Amino acid sequence: MAGGPSTVALAGAVAGAGAFPFLAGGYRSVEALAEQISQARQLGADFGVNLFVPSRAPVDDAALQAYARELAPEARAHGLELRVQPGDDDDGWQAKLDLLVSDPVPVVSFTFGLPEDDVVRRLRAAGTTVLVTVTTAREAVAAAEAGADGLVVQGPRAGGHSATFDPSRTIGGQATADVVQEVRGATTLPVIGTGGVGGGEDVRAILAAGAQMVAVGTLLLRADEAGTPETYRRALADPGFTRTIVTRAFSGRPARSLRNGFALRHPHAPSAYPAVNRLTLPLRAAAARAGDMQRISLWAGTGWRGARRGSAADAVARLAAAL
Image 1 (spheres, rainbow, N blue to C red):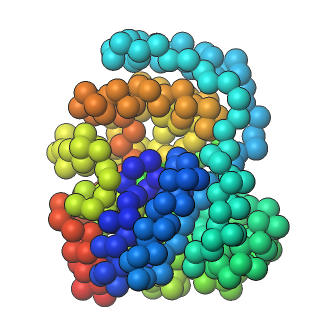
Image 2 (cartoon, rainbow, N blue to C red):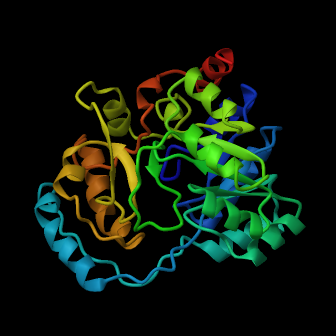
């Protein structure tokens, strides 16, 4: 839930309802993350922090420049000219790791890849439980071999970016419960299942498949405490959106979004995260300010219809009541 929706207030509401909250460390400076951690400590409850593992894949500069030219008409609609941003972007990886080792939190989870063994060892030595997000049994085995304490098993129906270690692969539509079963057959690590949760029935299916816990994200996007932008909130409730789609159009990495015009118009975006994400950011920001739901990333899992207005505590209570 990086990029705005994750807030300390949201974590507090979730914790108050008896669930385990996370803070999103992605797209946030190390100083801002440190401040959020400090505030979260005042909640009087355990919490976790999620980090993005940096991409090490080379970027095809020619393909990236061609995509920038393809997006020129989209940018002109909001008076912009998009430019490819030079240089690498590891989202402050080392600084955030150093922060979490020097000022440990109860749990750190990783997504977008497998952190190096030394990273896992340093965090565990600091007293932190380390979770790795995986999407296949093979990734689960690799995470176990790296020393992870547990796994977040993400099914393809999850909203937002796929956690796949290989962002060039095709993301299907398999139920999270099926992926959990496959992972449980490959490793004995504890499992948190996530993806496509729209209500209690989905939670029961994931637990029945062998997960010890279930994580949700999309269901909390319309919560009062979430920092979700207003245009995004309106889209999630708009009956005009009827399907989700996996797209690289916004960020260069496969991610599930509501099926809007931008995703449909650009089905062949290069696999180049975070370069594409930086390229489209000014357009997405301008579109959000203008209320243009057809040119922003509307990350949503297949259970997005279950997202409601009200406190996040109410959402947690509805899921717990269905067990």
